[in-house]
Length: 167
Ligand code: NI
Image (cartoon, rainbow, N blue to C red; front, side, top):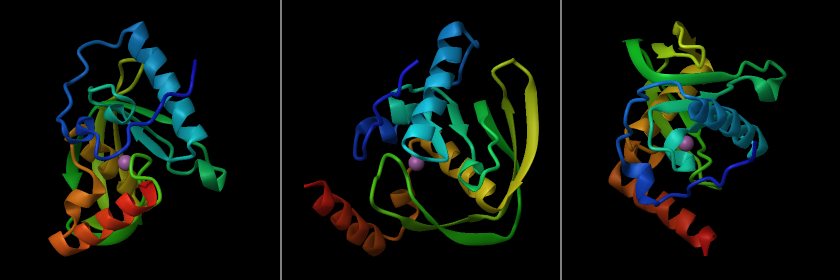
């Protein structure tokens, strides 16, 4: 097991739509374990396949570990099943866009269905930071990053900050 290098924006792999996971192979199991290790080491609360160059519909998350409530999830072929009507804006960071946070408006409650590493189907409702996290990671599987939620002026300003600190 090893900590994987994290793909940094604007790498084109962060703008691609990922393919479904066809079968849960030993390689997928190893990748999931390494993605969790990489996420905790970063340290972050979510990490999606394309962020480590794996162009498949899988992400890992643990919304509560920094508050001492660890709950590691490996989500394979995740999909939103229900989306609440209320929206809320949160400041979101991203391990692929280090040093820059963006205010993103999203539904405050979602229900997600996914396949776990054991092949079982899971359905769970998320609110608060968990809801932010699952939607942020789902975005990555569709080639969407926080910048893509912003209006043109806000995006340009944040991109400038990002480019400046990257130099
Ligand atoms: Ni991210």
